[in-house]
Length: 77
Image 1 (cartoon, rainbow, N blue to C red):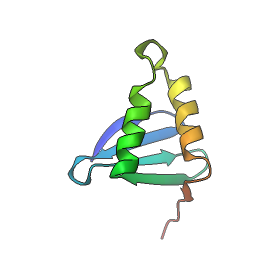
Image 2 (cartoon, rainbow, N blue to C red):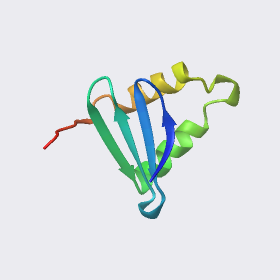
Image 3 (cartoon, rainbow, N blue to C red):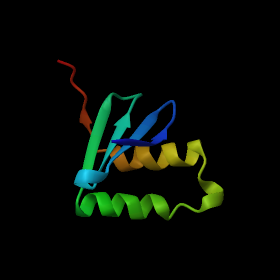
Image 4 (tube, rainbow, N blue to C red):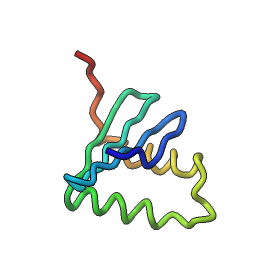
C-alpha cells in the first residue's frame, strides 16, 4: 500500500499488487475501492488534470465528484 495523495479532506491509497486504488473521503466518512478497469479509468482521469492545476483544491474537487454516489460509508468495528 502506498499513500499517493493526502489532504485534509481526502486520501488516495494505491495497492500495486491488486492494481487498485482506495479513495477515502475523510469529511463524509466514506470510501471507494477501484481496481481493474475502474482503477485504470481513475488513474487515466487523474492524470488528465494538467500539471499546472494539480493543487489540493482541484484534486479534492475531482475526488469529491468521483466519490459522489459510489462511495460507501466507513464502518468501524
